[in-house]
Image 1 (cartoon, one colour):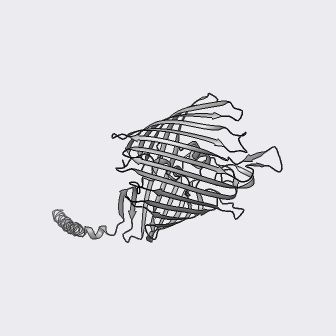
Image 2 (cartoon, rainbow, N blue to C red):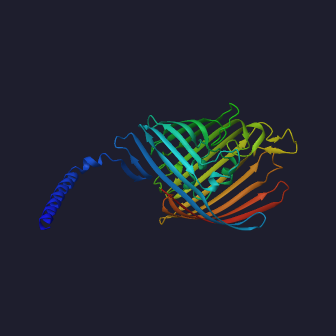
Length: 408
């Protein structure tokens, strides 16, 4: 037994010695070993790059949790709590940094919408490939936002209020599938301009039942007379960058959706007869030392009768909401990252449907606390809606809301 113990101890000693030499050698060659692993980065999300730089993968998430007290048009008192948005986003490149991709999925009920028989589920928000040969040109193919009004292009997570305006809800052009081409010419301290265009199918996201060859055409011009904004400041509301010099953004845009079967083009109810819709947008943004001023004009029109009639039942109609609206928004960001915001919007229908829909006004005030810029913030909002009905009478509603936005 004693002899066996000595032999066993000797074997353990040799094993420990060899392992010690192995770990020492591995430590010496640690840099070589690590080169065979992906490279991880932490910035705008969590990303990894393959050791041969053949691909890059970045993942981000964001969610909006909100609670609302609503006194509606019928004087009903409603308390609502919901996950307004829950998104996963993946982006990066494959094969070459000039070939980029973006994928965004939505999971909250308000994002996906009601599941209807025969209709596609709206989980996919973005699925697009971009070829960027240089810093000026970008060519996009797939489903993503098209270059319409500024507030719609901005992420809902980069807004100052908990939702976009009533005019964005009424007149915006939504995500669509097709081709886009951008030419960007931005300089920090000199006159800058961008041109963004798209040709898309005009049917909206996740649509797979095209029955015609009609398309939608969109063009947007962005002018920055005093130079580009800090940290792409045109893509988020509020002056979080605290611009040291005045910055101004002016952007007209036009879109035409030919012979669409939906009342809002990419969105809306089914029409009984196709219509060609024309949109016009104008955006103005000014930022300086914590101050932010925003203005937007939106309109939708059609050269035909906006009302369509069911040929099988003339009592049934469906119409295009033709009209226009103005948005005015102002805010100031204090040094402690609290922000005060005010907004006023008005909206009116054009001739043809003025006896079917009301004129609307919306007044909003809010206080936001930025904990980590727009990625993590606490928002409170009080909004009052006033509508003048076609008969001339008025009705109103108001709501008080608290929302937490968090993401990476």
